[in-house]
Image (cartoon, rainbow, N blue to C red; front, top):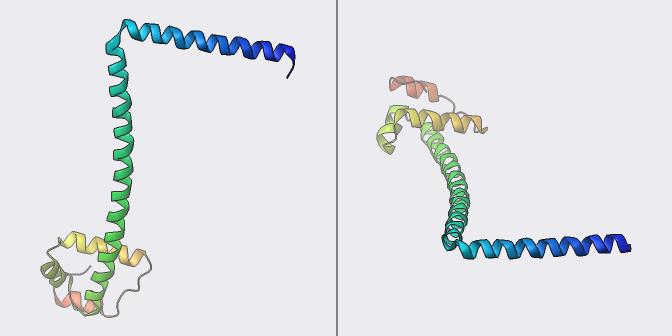
Length: 125
């Protein structure tokens, strides 16, 4: 490192030290500012943690829906109509249909004859 670069680095360190000292003096003049900054920092961290938990929860919901879709396809394979599945599971008809579509979108084979069983129940998925 050249002497000019060393001198500049020394000036930068001195400036940083002066800025730090000025900040500390200012904070001593306004002790409420320290508490405010701590509250802000804690709230920002709380947001980050909550958002990470939300992301994990969304992943858990997606995995549960895939499992439910697979189970619904098993019921359809047993020739149950959407109406029967709704009654057995307590899920809304719209949810059952959405989960069936999810199962079909994920490459799960549609069961042969499922349209016939559903038509017999008066419902078509």
